[in-house]
Image (cartoon, rainbow, N blue to C red; front, side, top):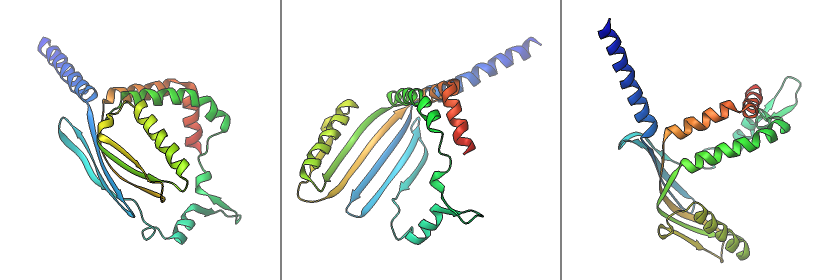
Length: 205
């Protein structure tokens, strides 16, 4: 009997160690994105303990992939009465419920963002808007965001283009986080009555 009890304790300790390792060892997400003119390509890789768990290419859909007529037909649903309903109008929460749940949702979102460690390995953005003033202001906002996120500026280049409308660039970034913080954020969301009400509201649609 004592041997069985010791074996159970040992198994519980081993299981707790495994769960703790999964929760505390950081996961790494690598993003490699490149856009030049009409061409867009990229890839992502999710790794844990140096082991690749998932990797795949990232491609943006083109107009050839999604015909406009077919897309419009997918966005509109006709009910039995003949009225047209946009699918985007479904699952919209009650405005009062949404406003009540907004503060705790923002707080949890900030907690998740603070748990992310972003390391920009390389970033280059070429940005041009229709108006030179808008271009300069937008570039200023981007630099403010970079400073707020405390990113390494030596690897980031933002090139404004005042002569034409343009958005090109490349991004190579590594994002590290621990699952423990994600689980804690989910736990906080489950505890909050206003967020639970919002989730039920969306689920009912």
